[in-house]
Length: 112
Length: 114
Image 1 (tube, helix red, strand yellow):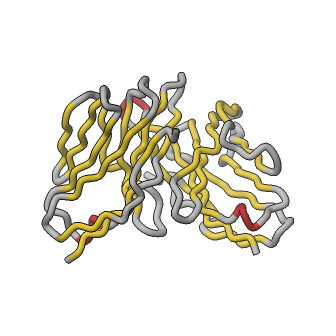
Image 2 (tube, helix red, strand yellow):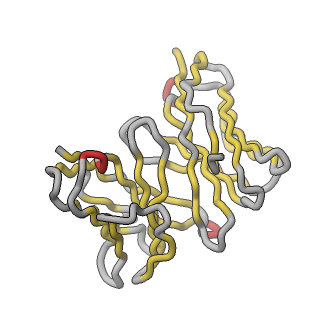
């Protein structure tokens, strides 16, 4: 079983719609969860972090965490073509130091 | 306020040559991670280093790959006798942010082996 799983997509949504990106993780002791955005040919950049169950909102982005289900999601409201990128879910696997493990990433395409 | 600096941006090597990839973390950061990304694949952890110390190299291939982070100077990822399968994007990241849990990535080195 992979440590962090994501559907690679592509996920296509029309401009203005809500994009929903999902991620599951295997290590029940994980404490920190991140979403990174990576444009084609560029490096990943952190867009959201979440540490406790529930929702965390930042502008058009909402991260959701359910530790009981080992599930993390990212919602992007009012999707824009500029949101088209690969979104990487990352989990800090408990291990005594900050080892961050990434999922394969979900490619999002926002159609104008 | 420079970010994570990686060089070279692109590196072309012939099979059997050596590749050296350099990474300078953000100012004040002393933890460096190396990740490898193959086309259509996610970021794969390779090694985690602090100054003069390798903390975790569980993601490094057993042969030909080595990493160091000396007291002075950048972190170096060294690949000896490169093969075509080593062609990938290699990203370095340094650890910072509140709680020291956020990874800040460099622009990466695209290694192409001919």
